Length: 397
Image: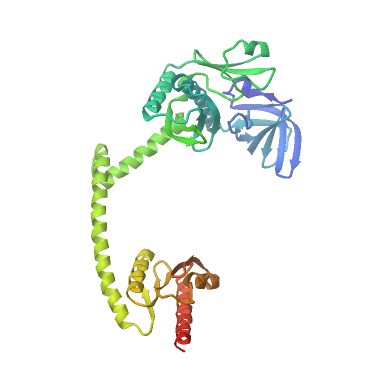
């Protein structure tokens, strides 16, 4: 049985011990040590990482009372020195204690029980038994939970028997029946938990609620604690500072400036659309006048697919023509027709695109495709042009 040093103190960072067993498995090398402070996966908390001598610890799992450490390779000696990745461990301690405090305040302020907890690399979440929470309630919840942090309440942990646990006002009944570990937040909560925690709420630093999301009739709260919350604030300030420089305005006036900029962009877009429509009228007339037969083909140096679609629709509405366009800037080919015939644009693309490394499709009347290179796009364009020319000759006969 591995001695779990993290139950003696979550603040043990370095220790020396002896390897008691080595295992080779399909997914890698594992070893068991007499004592360990490496916390294994469990209770919503990820495992610790670190080093055994100079060898990185890749994973830590609990099996039948033994803690298995996955390593890159086995140490050469049996007596080893171990060291935690303390930044990772303390982050987990802040978030696990933060989750306990947040869950306690959800129960007190919102009358909402916590259903699950997840601690990820980017953020932590709890699911609570509420379908919704008004924005004001979320603000008050965040203020209340941070008030409890500033009060710096003690967080202690200890083992009790089943009978002793029954006498405590536990949040929920534990699954184990002996050696029940209690994590107590002074005057706030008693919780059966096997995770690592800070020694007082002040060490959580702060809890920042990021957003709330409805999940299967419940509410999921996203949050960050401590150094992660500080980084979230710093990242936000960096973005805010960049926007302030970009719009040449004070941070407090950015929202008003963005609203004004958005209105300006809408007016410019309306003017641009009007100019495009005028150009399409002119270009459509020219293409119709210059065409030979029913096929209209044109190579654009730089024309977005949406604009090609609009022009093709204008042409096929005005005359019984087949339209073949290519935009060389983004390697897009468009085929459209206005008449009823036995030829289907989408089916033609589906049949031949793979030979030119193209992807796309469409309906009988219009199809479009993109290509990996300009050479592939031009090759398909010329192939389609030749196929349509031959088809038109057959129709004439």
